[in-house]
Image 1 (cartoon, rainbow, N blue to C red):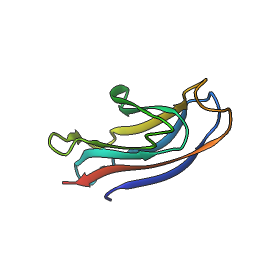
Image 2 (cartoon, rainbow, N blue to C red):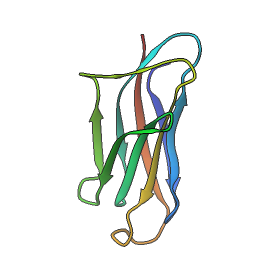
Image 3 (tube, helix red, strand yellow):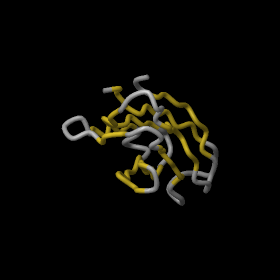
Amino acid sequence: MNNVYSITSVPDNIATVVNGITVPDRAPYSLNGLYIACEADLFFQIRLNVDVIFSGYLTGTNTTKHIDFSSSPYGLNARDVVTVTAIQADPLTPPATYVVYSTLLVEQL
């Protein structure tokens, strides 16, 4: 398994998991980053198990972000869980459901 792709709808004012992975038992992995895109103003977080390892923000004028951990990737062990959650940033975005595109950059070692 390498990268994890997702297209998810995020409703107004509801924190939503937009991407995630549970690391399988077969081998160690590394988390090298995230691509995320949305046309709404959006607050997002990357969690490793229960710890927030990155928080970011998308705006209507900056709709795409690339978070790069490749110079110092996070080591992932069997049964580790990585999740990306997102919530719309009110009142900057008109209430609606928006599509979030994301790719977790993971690599089997």
